Image (tube, rainbow, N blue to C red):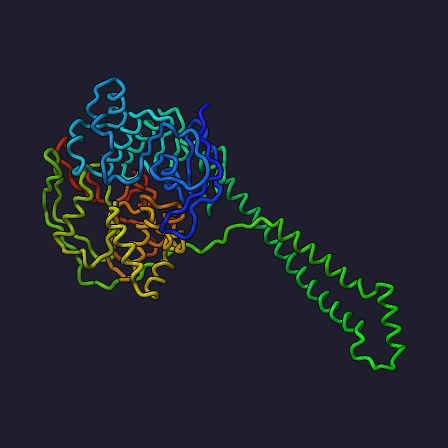
Length: 503
């Protein structure tokens, strides 16, 4: 049976002061394993180390001779895209059918939607037939139908697969083992994601109760040690001849007798026993991670004169063969709108048109679905150059979105999920009255998604959200704008009140 083995792995980015991994040991068996943890915990870094994209300083990785890394970013096409698209064999056609790949996509990478790019990326990964397949957030950008297609395609892979994802349905349907990354440590569970998390949380509750019991015992012990210290001090004072007169032979004789019989040692021996017991409890104590309150708040309505936002009737040319048509639309103050549609229907193009028509970019918080490396670096530098009080507010929000600000500031380039959190936190300082989010849950860890979901529920302002995560949308929006396919080359936008049963 194939196995990927990692022993005593140590890795630190050159620009960082803190290591990402220290003495990391883990084995991945044949079949699909999921790797979960908060943004910045090292999930993508571990995949890059396994794939040899980056080099580690110490340790051993065995079993990764033939590996394919399917990264979460879709900014650039896969290196072997031409090989796949220009190979006409039964294997290549099977993969094309599995992922609904079109021939013309080879020459249209820049025009493809993020979801279409992701499917091409996965197709190339399966075509390479590696011993180890590393897949980072494969269902980002994918519509409901495409997610099912991707699931079935990944199930067809029979070697060692490692999946990083926040998609709970995908994690449960694909993974056989779960690995949780937490503060440089990794915990192994030989069960799918949900079962593993239940086991982990149960264990955490048990550890927390034990820690409370230990803390109470230590507190009681410290008090006893303090009292014993006082007794020893008093005993030493009684045994001292320092303040006795030269002719006080009777008192000196009594002290000598007490010392001889060992009465002065009892208190000291008892103190030593108490301290030994304290050291034993502290050395055997199982420490649990410090937890922080999650959840953010949106302060609203700096700009109220932009409503209603007027969107003119138009037909957009999405490509040479596809168009999107919509009538006159208005976004009123306090509207909460979700936009849905299959990949390539023109959701992001619709948003870009709305920005152009209404000139909104300077008056709202807009978070795009993908941020380039150049934009990420520029944002990181910009935030680090802000005054300390402003930066402090931003990093407080980052903490409440389940990321560690210390590690974030120490990193060379934050993960896509952390960059998205930075954009949200920075944008919130302007108290926007209109929030526009394009696939906000992509790249985010589960704690962050729940925090954002709760915050948007309480948000007393206007928002427009593109998402394929219907659970998320049903929690935060009241209206759905759906881009429906009318025929092979035309999509139309239809509006409706959210119907929970329909989706």
